[in-house]
Image (cartoon, rainbow, N blue to C red; front, side, top):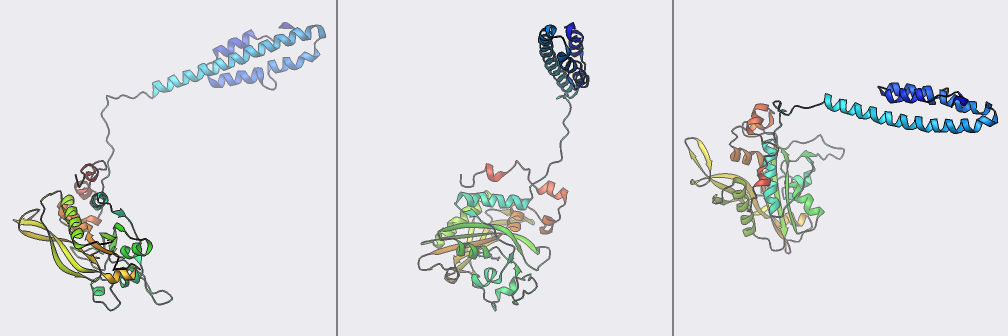
Amino acid sequence: MAESGFESAEILGAIREASSAEALEELRIKVLGRRGSLTLAMKGLGALPPETRKSAGAALNTAREEIATAFAEAASRLSRAALEQRLLAEKRDPSLPVAFAEEGRIHPITETIDEMIAIFGEMGFAVVEGPHIEEDFYNFTALNIPPEHPARQEHDTFYLPPRGDGTRLLLRTHTSPMQIRTMLKEKPPLRIIVPGRAFRCDHDATHSPMFHQIEGLVIDRQTHMGQLKGCLVEFCRAFFGLDDLPVRFRPSYFPFTEPSAEVDIGCSRQGGELKIGKGGEWLEILGSGMVHPRVLQNCGIDPALYQGFAFGMGVERVAMLKYGIPDLRAFYECDWRWLKHYGFLPLDIPSLVRGPLS
Ligand code: DAH
């Protein structure tokens, strides 16, 4: 070893005792760096007399291997120590009291729509959604509401400014235009529900300019009123969780259905308190009917081959009835105290736990 002027014993000792990664790196540079002691000794081999060069070279190679092993061992010893130290410093005390994070709530509208989707989903309905900004054709004309039809006045439509060709887009006044869009796009049989927003220029204690509806449409061969009744009775009973809930079909009028029926559920009002169920009184909750043959024709469906039924329901209204929410306006105020009272915990999803048909 002395032949090359390089002594490894001291270096090996220093490597084994290095107390940090930085100290180890300093040593590495001192020994193996460009101007390190071992590097220089290797370079100096050429200057040695030939008779000592060979043995000096072999000794330096052995020293280099020993040093490399020592460095690797020291590095892993230091990283193990660092990890142990971190684990010690980050130790958790599981006996400490828990600091609960503030939880959010599912809005009753979202919850109600989820419940409806679960019930109709079990009956084989698919969910579709559509645009809030609509064309007159889908919102009115194709639904058998031509330009001079009185039903247009009832809808208090929000119109957008006229386009270049004079026509105006509008905010859909109901979810029914999705009946038309679906029938034009897809071939029967169809079984869809359409949850979503609708807009009417109407604002008081029981009306909001933006509200939610859920639309239903079934198109198939030989569809009849009995199926409409069966489907909606089943829905009402599942939704309100009452197997014997009285459900009544009352003749009505909608331009896009013939015959049309409004659906009432049984209730009682005693001492100003409304109770859903048997009780001899009635509450209207939705509109329905057999799809008008002209609506089918407008969508290229032959009424001699296919018939269908449709229905539409206000989400806020049934949510208020089911959950005893007294004021419509509170739905949109985003008052955290209200949401904490009427909202739902994310994991408390009755629609997933309580099967509507079981
Ligand atoms: N579109 C109606 C409304 O907004 C609700 C409705 C009634 C929808 C009867 C239907 C239906 O599909 O068949 O008042």
